[in-house]
Image 1 (cartoon, rainbow, N blue to C red):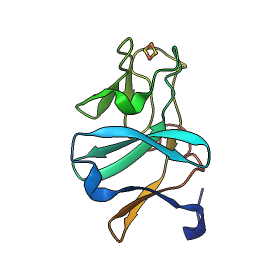
Image 2 (cartoon, rainbow, N blue to C red):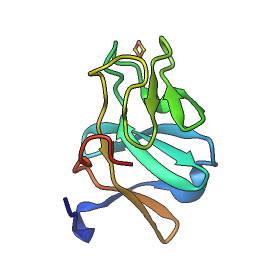
Image 3 (tube, protein in one colour):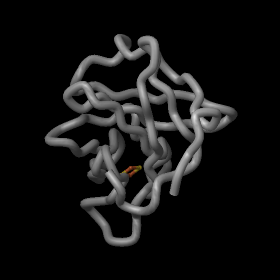
Length: 113
Ligand code: FES
């Protein structure tokens, strides 16, 4: 699946998230969890499929984010759930331009880093 330049929108200053950090960002009425993994930014759905906690507020460890409420683990690159089958969340393309992180709200194919 290809995306056009026009489908990306700014969501955060790149220097506002240090490597190993994540947070919730907002775009067009939706929430996304944005992570900085060793200088590469990744975005997944913010809402945990278990009980809806914000994954952007979770702990990031070895490329996985742990939900702040009950600890379910998700791959921060792909959204794949490591805790329970069938509970993956979507992931979204990102890019950096002029010090800004841009997010494309069109999800990547399932489990694509
Ligand atoms: S709300 Fe995320 S693990 Fe329960």
